[in-house]
Image (cartoon, rainbow, N blue to C red; front, side, top):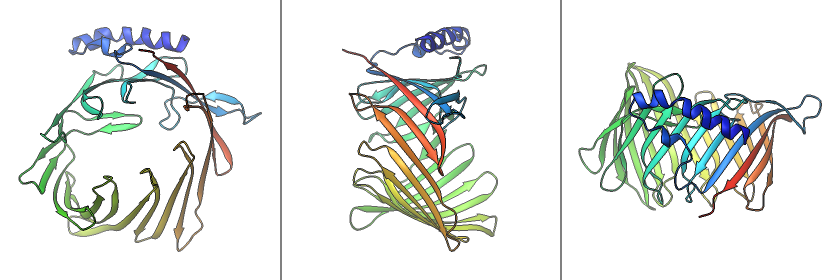
Length: 310
């Protein structure tokens, strides 16, 4: 509870900054519609006993200290990333057009002492995002500013501050679609490529391309993707000038990632392995995760849950 009080006190201290920029600070208090609160703390394993918590992690993307407020659909309403002493360094509030489908309307981020950023989402009649007003970079996700100019049902142009992407979509057999694209960056690097998607799941199955710096070829690549029955990536085969790389993921019965392996041919000597051991509460939410990388304990992550009854 001390961490929670510190977070709210720091959020209140941001009221002046937020108010001057037209942001309602109440969005950084517990939101209406909150169904679950998750408080995560991450630790290095103790040097004396790796099974026990040592020093806490700080400002780490993989192992954050974070408080999340979720709605009944599991959508984030408010996320607060904090230092081990409870002082927040990033706050993000979310609002939705449709909670059931997770359709975002707006994301507000405060990263003291900088001014708040507000990303507003524009959608077409199908609900697809055709514009984002601001780029917001959070520790575990990125919302990139973009504008989409659609000149036909099959052609599309996306414009951001760093690049423009022109694409054309063609239907294939077995309910798949092929997207041919040209991406032009502001530094004149151009990528020509093709992506194939399964329309039943929305998952990408193949991706190949060539990257040019002016007229010189910088790299060529080809990727193939495989998935578990519930839609999680299980295998990626990546081919480029240096050889073929293989990436595989394994999951437990709860859908949590428990093992990752990578190797490359022809050298076939670079293997990365990670294992995760979880403990769960009576609601099926994991409350403790011990991560071991290449046989060395790396992190102990603890989560506390509060369920809001309606």
